[in-house]
View 1 (cartoon, rainbow, N blue to C red):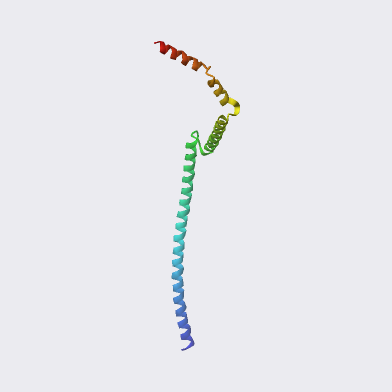
View 2 (view 1 turned 180 degrees about the vertical axis):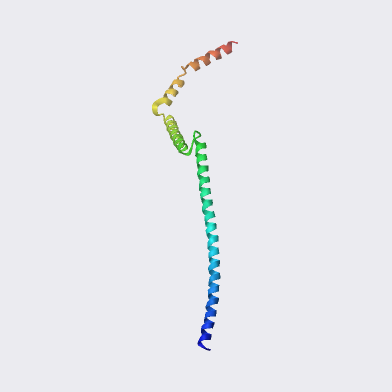
Length: 130
């Protein structure tokens, strides 16, 4: 083969490779354009979803005002817990007789000199007469 033939064959091969590369490049450009379009669509959707979430959060917060929002419900829970602890402490004190309230109540009703006992005795006496 002559030099001219070799170069002609090589030129034809290179032209074929250039055409293939050009086709691949065009395909990649089209794929890149489609990917960019999908990315723009996704970014727009993200923006829309973020705005919708903010709106929902604001509506939720606004509806919670005056009805015990999360910030105040935690305070209410703490107050309920303290009230329960105080009530338990008072109950234990009463059971133990701390403060002598329980002892004084027992003494008041144990001697039979209470107004209720007196009135009950009068009613029973009256009932016997009738």
